[in-house]
Picture 1 (cartoon, helix red, strand yellow):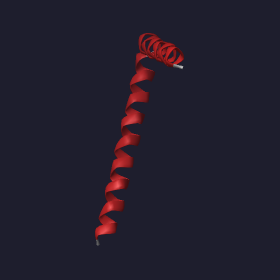
Picture 2: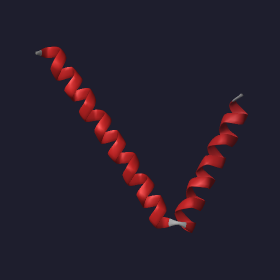
Picture 3: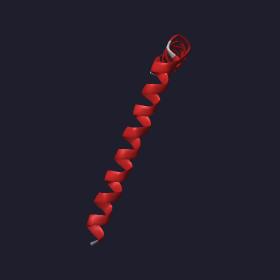
Length: 54
């Protein structure tokens, strides 16, 4: 199980590096979308917690 997890991580890192090298603009767009999603999720959690306190 541990060996498979290590291999999967290596493959993921290789894929990410390949994507960044071959299509840097697309990779930047994907990172921006990811950070936007995380930001929206954090705002939603904050709004939810605020509504619980009121």
